Length: 83
Image 1 (spheres, rainbow, N blue to C red):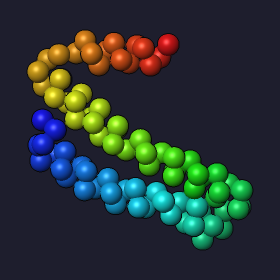
Image 2: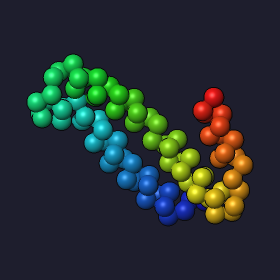
Image 3: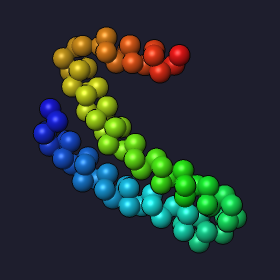
Image 4: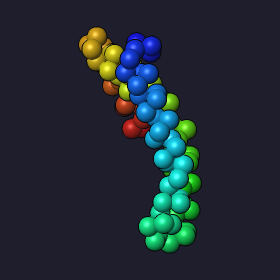
């Protein structure tokens, strides 16, 4: 399932998302936001970029397991994350 078309398409699209997120600070400054807030938003977005592969992997794995009607791993990981 990791070599499916959706994984490839999402991987390509995530590159564009990562690039756009890397310009968050500049965009907020251009829109007239204060420098402190723009800097914090830019830092948050930059750090969040590194979570994109994990989010894509979880999404694909979740869809695959749901299609196979295997729900225990997703429920268990969700419960662990809540604790």
